[in-house]
Image (cartoon, rainbow, N blue to C red):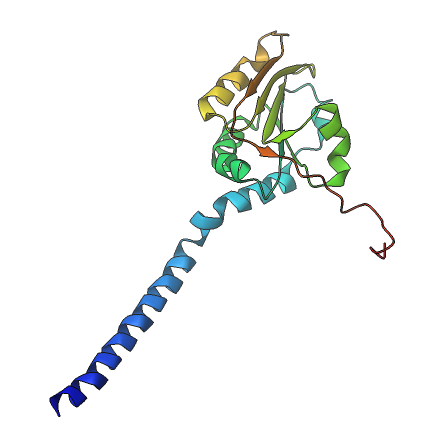
Length: 181
């Protein structure tokens, strides 16, 4: 008889624990959503707030040009670092962000031979390519290169890291008999 009384008590406690756990998960996801989705949000905002490349290459300021994709995990990882560089240097340096999935940037993707992302190209105020960074980079390394852009360095430096994403071929614009396009 006593065991019959314990079962509803255990079921009620189990339900209470389960409901509490679900509530904690929901509240945590609401409070920490910016933390979890910050990198993706930053990548989207980079593209929206980007200086047009034609303006950047003609306004006599050094240019920071990054090729990225929203699906690229390395790009997401680097986004907070790039954001802090942008905040620090945006008055003196053009910041251009080109999404490799956007067909309108294919000219620049070919011109700068982008095969892996993120790829950052740094140009001096005359439009000379000074540095190319491919893959995951330390913020200090990019910062040092940005600081050197005002010097009259002409040699091009290419820095490759093993951690990068290979660009997927974008075939969204191709028309086939089955695409109804």
